[in-house]
Length: 383
Image (tube, rainbow, N blue to C red):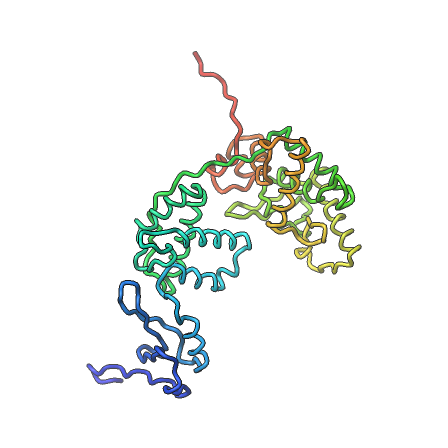
């Protein structure tokens, strides 16, 4: 035990490091349990700050590599923080669509001009306060629309929250920001429209692929299941053979919704059976290896026999809708999305809002109000 008042001895520099071979501006800090390597840099305000670059087990080559990576870079601006996040494993785990969305938000925010005649991405992190973020959000809303402004604000908030526990930021300047009101998008089709589109998709889906008048087989299956199961597109394309139960089709819902089993009827069984047959035929012709586990066999596949991705579906659907409009089969104003079929399915479901909440697996009555567009018929008040 150390005598009272005696300071703790500093951890000595690791013996495997020759101090004469250290890179420039690389220093050893002996405080703490193990000590660490750090560097100093100057902020835009003229203050010097420290940055940890490695632990005590780092080799000399690791220290040189770390200093090379940060040499000439501003370690205190928005661009630097964003690049740190994009290189982190948490970003690599995101879905491709989410990654593209974050990259797009970063490009918008980073390139915004400021009064200092430099882009916003080069502004020191210490200068990022709520008024600065508010001005950025207002500019984006005016130039790119309210939806882009909301998404960019969410990206900024996420980025600063990510950096805070890692020592890159001290607070989140995007917490109390006044957001523009987003335009509500209702892509729910009319009954006649979606039935017409479904019939066309089913007829063309059974024609030989890549011939005149043909379309992807998966279109009519996705429309039907999304409507009958009242589910999102990602939930439709996430279905596998493991979701085919004796009682019905299991829907593993996302975004906090409760999973449900859609009871079988003749039409639903036929669609699911045809989807399996279509997939198995493709796999047999292409000699595709058949996964042993049921949860590895996607129910709905594309022409190549692979599971349909979100970006792949967007391409298929966009092409199909454009073709129908060009042929005059539907009007541009009648265009809808697959997510609109969930709206349509919940709207057409009979019963109270509580019934619809349970059948669609929604988490609250408030969410029912988002998806249910039906107008109740009520008796007149007594006179």
